Image 1 (cartoon, rainbow, N blue to C red):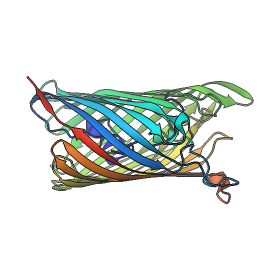
Image 2 (image 1 turned 180 degrees about the horizontal axis):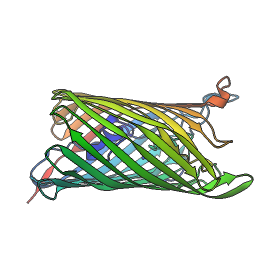
Image 3 (image 1 turned 45 degrees about the horizontal axis):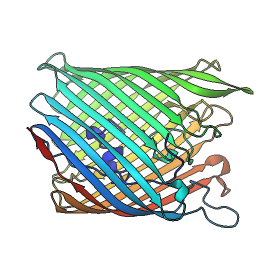
Image 4 (image 1 turned 120 degrees about the vertical axis):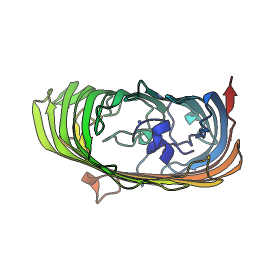
Length: 413
């Protein structure tokens, strides 16, 4: 299914907790989503996706250029994939991989291969404590495919890895505790751009008290340290170290058995240790999820401080998301929808204030348990507010395609 599909981007409990160098290439390909049948014990699901698509902006160029429009092309894709799972009363484990082979009909120099892999583990250590671990790796051709803040859309190969591990514990009948670690790494192929890679490592913890079967309130805190490969300080380019500290309050409410509302409000402290700059400000996070019989709907909003991967600075980020997810194992006809809007306001002079938009839609029909036919449309848009009255600051892209997905789960005895 499309790379930015809601199952990948928002409901990635089977792929990655929300919400991520390739050869020179520029397009968004569909990511075949293999349905999980949750067969007890070990199972393996091989799959292959065959499709074609039209890309209106293969070079991720500005929307309007002197003398014409950005280059477009059609291409064929082939996606072998595999998914290994294990389920019992205490363990939920899933890992998978897919590679995408792309062939352009005109711009054959852009032919290439992309890689994606994931791991998701939940293990109940005892009646009160559960261990969780997640991993997600992406090697993609363009930066508009990455789940990162403050990154201009460009045609440059990108490698991204996000790993997380932690525990969820019930300390008493009403008191819940969680703690964990998360590390993110990113690198870019082209070194002739202002993009800089680096790592972000963080620890977080929360403590919440349940007042009833419907609501809980608690506190949370976290520390993140970002080490960016390069940053601009004056006229020099040097490594940059950033420290983020957050502390706030949590609230959770269930108005009904199928609906959950979450909110967090707190205080953030930013310390740019390389430039000697500190900032303080509020952060806010809110979301709602509703599970219907054949679909899950959700939306979220977040405002926070995040590291920037352009010039090695820091942004204040605002993000709004929404999605509709219809499980493939419960619907013969299904639709997957997702939309995301993000605004980044940089603190470092010379970085671009960006407004970015992603919209994905996919419709499919399951001919049988192992065969599906799907069509999709992906739209991305980004502009810099420094040039809001000009055409030079706007990038738009449409990807329209169709595909056949073949997959069959096999029980491993």
